Amino acid sequence: MDLFHELKKFKKIDPDPAYVRRSREMILSSIPEDPVLSPWRILVHSVQFGSAVTLAVVLLMLVLGGFSAWRFLSPFKLSSLDPASLKAEAQAIDIQIQLTKINYEEAQKAAARKAEPAAVPAKAASAPAASDSQASTSQTSSIEDVLQQLAQ
Image 1: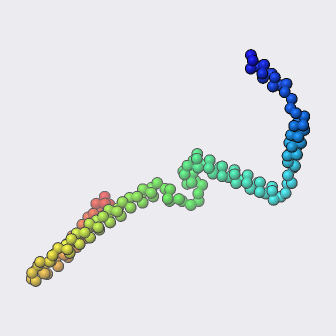
Image 2: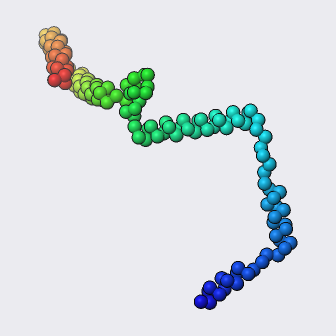
Image 3: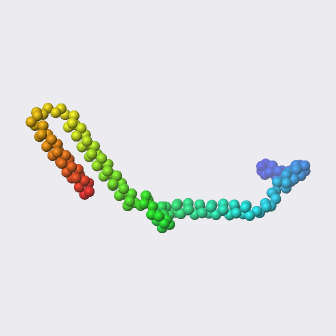
């Protein structure tokens, strides 16, 4: 009960009259006057409001509709967001990587063949040339075979 008694004492406290007068003058002097409505100020406020509403609508569409709304609203086809084209592009990159790997392995084999010492008699010099041409045709056919396997 002592707390209630103390709180009732606070109701009876009056501020100093000089403080009341000074604070009332400060409050009344700080009230802004009516702003002058110029056409420039009206234009700026309308542009700000319009841009804020437009931005809010765009963000709301992105949040609610996601990127699927782009198909209906955009006059341009965004191929970078099309799932079918993304899948086809990923497959093409995979094929290019595999072809590069095959070309790299063939280059390594050719470099290994060139690095081997050529201890071949003069008579048999024409035989390796024939075998090289056969090897190149077998390499060409092996590339074609690999491409066929990749296409399947």
